[in-house]
Image (cartoon, rainbow, N blue to C red):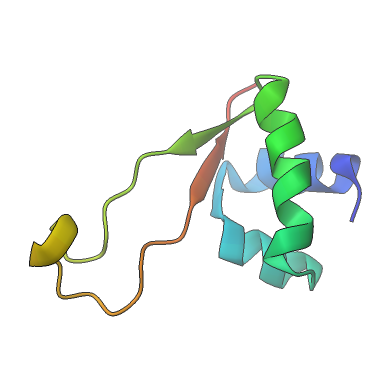
Length: 75
């Protein structure tokens, strides 16, 4: 995966989670994150503040997994 490929994917999708990006490119999230961070630094991606699936924060949340990070293409 290259920065250009990530850009094309995000331009088409508009929003995607780190998990969705990793699955699409068949790449570990730990390898995707630095590329996402480069686009964030350039002001082209932003991380959305998404709550867990149940909508409760902290100890009131009954979800078993934390929400995935979701990113949005801004340009």
